[in-house]
Length: 123
Image 1 (cartoon, rainbow, N blue to C red):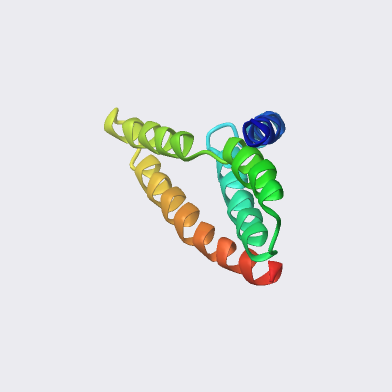
Image 2 (tube, rainbow, N blue to C red):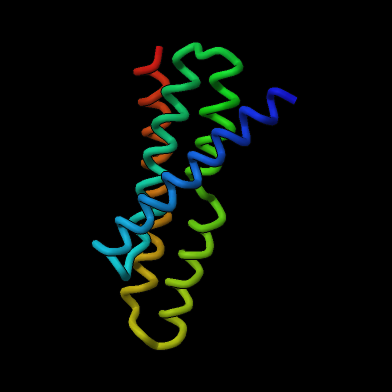
C-alpha cells in the first residue's frame, strides 16, 4: 500500500509540473509542441540520472515511477506528431510534415542521449 501512495504523490506533483511547463511553453511557441519536447527530454535526463545514482527503491517509486511517469508523456508526443502530419494532409504546408519528422527524431535521439548522459552523471 505504501508503494502505491508514493507513486500517487509523485504522480500528483509530476502532473502539476508538466502542466506548468506546457502552459509556459505554449505562450512562447503556440504552433510547436515545445512543452512536450521539454518535459520528455528533461525527463529522459532525470530518469537516467536517477537510475545511475543508486537511489533507494522508495526514491525510484516516488520520483521515477510517480513524478517522471506523470511529468513525461509518450501519448501526447504521438498525438501532436499526428496533428502536425494531418495539417500537411489538409494542404496547409509541407513544412508541417518536416517539422513533425524533426520533432520525432529530436525527441527520440536526444532523449536516449540525455538518458545515457544522466545515467553516467548520476554514477
